[in-house]
Length: 437
Image 1 (cartoon, rainbow, N blue to C red):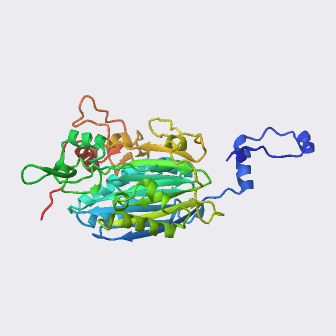
Image 2 (image 1 turned 120 degrees about the vertical axis):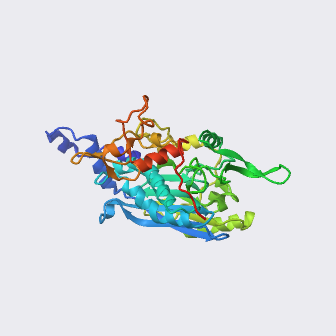
Image 3 (image 1 turned 45 degrees about the vertical axis):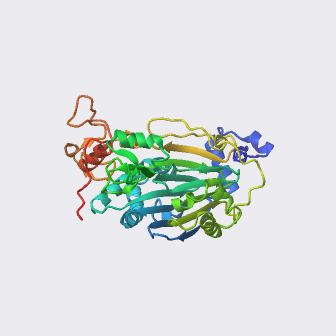
């Protein structure tokens, strides 16, 4: 990328005759980009799976467009949905989540603005999908690991324990998701109990406790998911979101359900398929998980290579010390209220970290914008995107019944239904519909 900053070479005779003012740096860089023919990466992918219960689903959409009909605005989506207690939630999320996310992004904005709006839109889309599935009055649930690739920028949103890892040419394997297993996440255990849930193991005859930590009622091992209508609202659909930008050296994503990660570590999965095409790599990861643990759960794997057009496959990494600190891979991020970003490349020039947030508090994830329709005076719900009169709902910052500490004039705005969902997730009221047998 340093080559992009080289000055343009102009003959001396021409320089001496120039009378025009200096050319802005942005224009120089733009010319260099065009001269160097910097292009969007080529995205190659492979998928493999073995079914035990038949509750894993995946989504591959490599032909999405931010502006319909404009190929220059193309982006790709890859997702894993690991269902439990049935397949309804996984299928519903697969069919509706992408549309719900895209509906929360403003129209006619630049690529940079689109990428900045994406983390908040992912939160809104996940919550909206969960609300819509509740209305079906079914009890199944699903994890979601949802990956958006736009150019060299990767944005990952996840709830549950499916996982996405990044393997770069530097030889460092990095986790782009956070596991929401109660057994392994103390912060989530504290949140669940503070919201009114109970965390404990399964009691068997004689008072002995067995198995992993679960939340009660419901007995779910996860603290975040979409669905699970029979469990308390403390099981939230608010995703952890991470956004990074690769250098033009590219990288490989491995997105998989817990059938893979219960058998293989992140490093093992990455090393097992380096140097192989994505399609073969996915099959090899599944085969390695099967060899290590046997088929004890649904096992689904997506391998996605993000590479320059002239690189057919990511090369095998040469022998190096593999214990490099991940802090050397990712640049530090600066934080502000609406956008957590850095404009500087990381020290080793491999990956730039743009955004990361995992709070389960909805008000912290939706920002402070208060979108409205200037012509009609209507306010748009930040979650479901429905326009309503301000008198029909409350700001996300409003206290119940306009308590003295509330700030109902500060956005974003929530419609009554989404406001109830927010309150329920914070332990203020139940909102799950009754489930009939």
